Length: 225
Image (tube, rainbow, N blue to C red; front, side, top):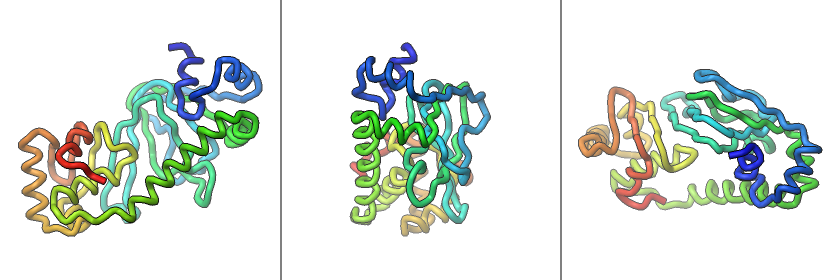
């Protein structure tokens, strides 16, 4: 895949013609960088001044609870966008630490360049608005979803609601009692259900850690709003 094709496959550039992209490349300051395995791409609570696109490679997104009682690690595959929800708004700081698992190639756009593109390119502006609106709508509906009463449904809701994307490899670093408290169930019942899923190969559990190879497979046990 050529660089042009890679850029046109990115969410905010989809729908643009090659002529449009030629014009953008001519008048926009693109910053291309590489990050080696083990290095941070972005770090939580640092200022978000650039919109970043993962063009090649694999990274891991690390998210944590405000009280540090648990955290989640999830794989990020290229192509992916980093920082759009933090580039504007009340808190313009990264909400996650993202670390390269392999050599990663990134396209970085300064906030000023994003604003220029939004002003001059209708398709780019519509893509940006649609992405922000979609994310806001999904987030807004979560608080209105009925709380699950069944143990399995509660676990599935917790796993899906604490990930950026409800598919792929996830690792929850959480104590059994903390998880039980979060979903309003007993520690014993939570342990039994997780061990049942472990026996079926859906997850792998160890002390303070729940490894989910494919979250979408686990969620197929029952539809999870």
